[in-house]
Length: 204
Image (cartoon, rainbow, N blue to C red; front, side, top):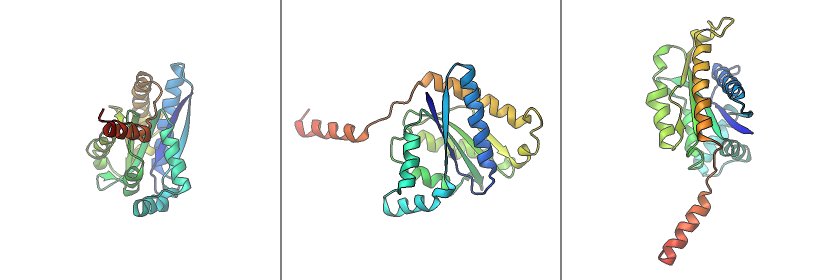
């Protein structure tokens, strides 16, 4: 069974960011189903974890709830990550979460990006802020991402409108990427570091 972790950094309830995350999740699982791949998904909402994320930044120790979120992502085969945009960049909560996420968690993992904002002026957030961050984290970032402004949610229509078309296009490409990558192999960084230290001490 293929596992997808869906990260939503929406700050309000209800949240257009969560709505876009749900649309992308449903479209990707539908596209995988057409391709004969069974997939499940689990959502990680960052809003209820806001205090835990800040505490982890200040103390270096994640709470049990935050550890659970880390485990959801580490055990997934792919990630869908969606953030609201403020002043043409991602939300501080979104960035803070990835600042405390253990290193190498996203290494080699396919990631589909999404962002929401009040106007189209924020749409560059995907390529000038989110894509460099995920590239730094060694994720395999899908070429097609989805930005949705407030107007997009008011023009969905029966077929999903222009936003629905963009979501379907991104989901199709991401499903192909996921199939090409296969199941994600979780790295054991502790064993890797121990092995490296043993080689160093042994002169190997």
